[in-house]
Length: 364
Image (tube, rainbow, N blue to C red; front, side):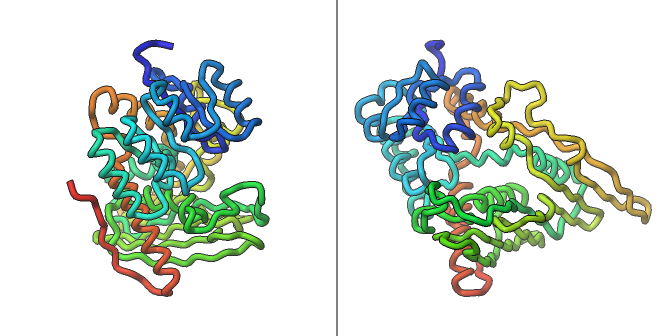
């Protein structure tokens, strides 16, 4: 380990820690995982195998009270209800912090974390890694380069088919007050991506349902966002899609784009691969999207190969931000907006009507 490496504490080694963060951290030059927390003996052994030089401790309290001199950056990947209290304690201990999505379980906690980071002059960011999905990068490029002009409708989906709950997973047994449910989970990504593309919504409508027997929080979510520029975004997340719809469908006044299939990085990480692989983030050509553009009064359609996805960009940008005191890869104010939208969406579902939305940012 180089003495110049940024020392990382991975707070939690469940699915998110082991699969979605650990391989990316290991592959990123200048980062070194020096401490991992887990209370599960099996996961402790997995952590020790993956990071033989790291110290394994059984709790966050032990890490922050007795081992805080061994890390500079805390990556919070514990169950959602612990995100805010653990992130706050790490900031107060003088550590930079990455919080896995969702940022927190309510906007009050988000604002408190942002203020704590400012008070202690520490970097705070949120792991909205799907900003670096191949298909999202493709949509972003089409809009940035004005290939699609005057977008009117934007459809985005994370749809899966898991019609029975897994009682062993905390995500299946947590209520909405603990950050459980698809609106917090996949909904965080869908909302964040829509806001990156189109800004802050002016109105929100939402439908939430519990479809599977025994589930405590929503497992079927639909969110409609209206933006001042006229874009209407329809966002879908559910566990009941044996036949999923398109991942993205974008309609504009001069054409459109449609894409099926998911970014390949999640499956690659689950299979034990890392960003060091030669073709990391490159999907099969069979999953390429379709682009249709009006030219001289005719619709011209072409197959559009997706951009290369790369979650590692988040951690390289984070490393550089800490070293150079530059902005974080994801502004926590953006993540606060996402949680505020989720709160409005939940209220909309309860009331059964559309609500106006005003973004609440923290005072600077």
